[in-house]
Amino acid sequence: MTSRRIILFALTAVALAPFCRAQSDNQVEARKVALDLAGAFANEGFKVRDGHWTGTVKKGDRAVVAVNLYAGNEYWFSVAGAGKGPKFSLGLYDENGKPLETEQFAEDEKAATGFSPTISGQYFVSIAADEGDTGTLCLVYSYK
Image (tube, rainbow, N blue to C red):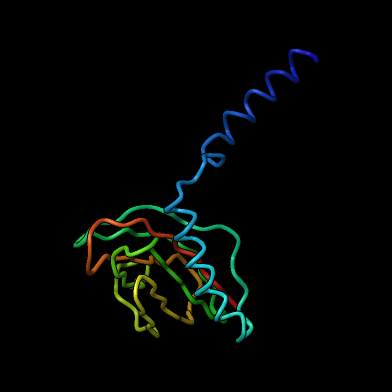
């Protein structure tokens, strides 16, 4: 192997390292529950977007994820926790931080919010832990 290939391989391995981290059991469980919830929207023609966000949120705190949405599409954001984690709620905000009116669903450690933007751009999904202790969460979203 030439030194050029070795350097390229090393740089690729370093660049991909953050994406290759092993997920905890709680993150895997939260993702499974979030995907199950998002699957309910598949019956209405929604496709689950590749990728997901995981993290932890404690009661009273919020996690915020920036997303790019396109006018004319419909979106559902689904969040879930692992096991008997906290109850989550979702909020959606425009690029100026103004709260948007959305459809809401919440049950146990799962929540979802639906939205159809009239303007393409960056939006922010806010995930709050309303009840319970610190919990692991996973956020996925669907579109059509």
